[in-house]
Image (tube, rainbow, N blue to C red; front, top):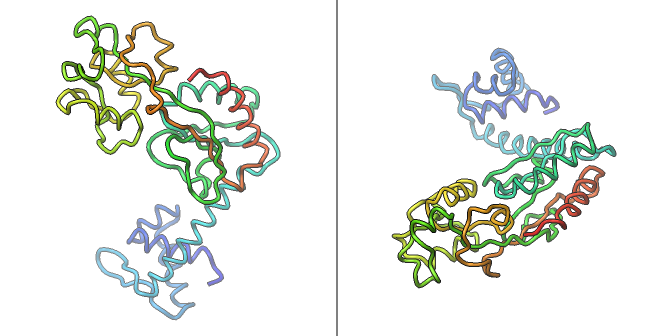
Length: 292
């Protein structure tokens, strides 16, 4: 077991199920894959795969190898991710992950930070996926909701995101606006398509409007904003965003129960590196100027 190339090849064959699939992942010729499999089976004196017309199926021994190789591959990827952030210079890649709803706030900060450090390459990753800091998928995460509880993460309170109910002036001109929840049944609302969305304002809206008035359903915050701006219905908007527009009518002001806590998360192995420390300090300084 002293040849990692052969172990890695066997792992990819077990994972992909075919020699051609493993060769594509590894970037080698399929003959190289076959040679590695023959070599490791010969060295170990055991069959790792059952060959058949549709591909390769791991034997019991092959399954054991797959399990160990998976753990080793994960650890090597984790190590590589950590090493990327351990230089003394603020250069190379800075990977930041966040909710897309915070993009308008974070992108200017990232841009200014990059201008201060011209050798820096910024990767800003948004979406619903939870990027794994322990595997080096990001240096800094900006997350909303309950405090993240993944082990080995450094979690810092960062901000409180307030939200209110708004309608566009075009909607208000056509339908008026309700004086309170008791009049919601006579209006149209923009809501999340996911009934399990855990955002405080999404839960509140589900509990306080009749289902039939949820007439425009969306899957992300950007679509929700666009629908409200277009007059599709009443919906929740971040207070900071609504304050920048003059084509909105407030329906209900921000309530404490609608607020979302925002957390700044880093991995313990990268938390004190020069790059992460420089960026998080700069981000906190700029965030102190935000009116959320």
